[in-house]
Image (cartoon, rainbow, N blue to C red; front, top):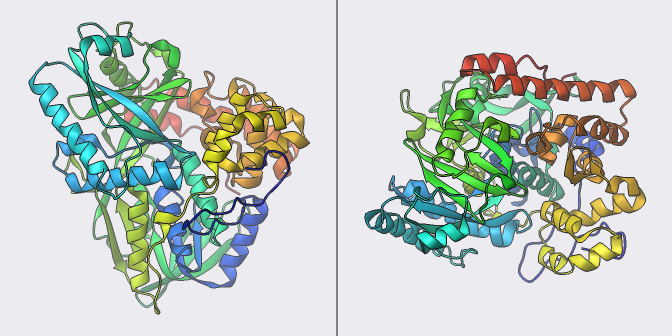
Length: 588
């Protein structure tokens, strides 16, 4: 990262690492150019769906030398991929289900993400498992954690996190003074990793674009082009301009997650499997509500509950209930919130109340389903199939193993293409901003002096943008007022709003406050104070007039109002109805 001078050149690759991509943004000009390219040529691979698996598939395909496009109906990661537990983990609970292959695969991927692919975005996080019984439970859980550690070493490289440890009751009390004294007799600690899921997806799409993929969000696929029984492309609708156009491709990859069945229905063929949606909600509470230097893993009657450190906050989740209502805006209910508070309060000396909750978000897991399985029992395995000639479907799985899912999907597409096509290279391809991150982190104090910015701000930017932080800092150098924090959201700077529009594909205020930043769940007012200021900054970058700035602000405020009201409702049907009272963002 070049602190002493303005530069948009990439840091050179190191050793045997794959060639680092050019620094290509996802601004409006790049979007327009991508759409024109998609209309003008037949692609080798077109990916439908801009979540973690779709973005991973686009990167996998383009880095094999295939001409590649990716379309997303809303914003990048606007579905499941921005509403997860934000953990990169092996899934320690799957050991109890004897799903050793899935756990091992996920732990290998965890190490890869931590150490090679995105060390600026994926960070180790320590958890405590409190013990209630002194002997059997310690042996049983300890054996599982030992197996967890062993699996993490089987990928041919160190895991990137320390191994598990046993703690006495006194050690647990010192580490987490806020636990009820009678809630545990000791504990075990282990490590996993965490990530800002939405930021990771946006970076992944940008990485794919840097290698030559044509990426466009807010483009909805409304049908498939067919020659006989073979899929040869899609019918697309640009929701920003209203334009309808066609994109032709030798292979189309359906990576639409919980929308898989809906997308398959557009082909006119009955799917070979079903994807069911399981709703999980998370609460965000301030970090000072209880004292702990690590997260918590708690067992519930159905599954497990995580309490995850998240900057100046805690994330508490998750629930696991069937959902068959609106997939775009799953709603949390009062019952969901009370369920999480009830379970976490069983171990806290000072209970949390609804007044302590500063944010709530709900997401849907895409689970491979039988017709009557309980969602908590459904498979987290993924499946890839050629449902009809020319169309590959990838579904199921979990966030951590996205790269394996993407590889398998592109492998299936490649099998139907002519010529000798290279194998997947993504194991050695870092995300933009990753190369040189450690060196930049080591000289963060020097960078702070060079840009006249507080060192804490530099750390914040490095952990969100990696070595691309210099582009954000250049904005501040050119316009010092962009170095000011947003109202009601002190962790985020005005420059980050502008950068989201010019480099990260944000087209609407909601894209910025809900995904490029996490203001919508981290701020006490859910971003109400920040909205007018952010809308004006976004409008200046995207050429909006005053009416459009006001419209975007109003739309966001209506979203917040609807979400708050839905979280007071007693059941899913009522919450869904109230949430949908807010108008949809961004249709021409």
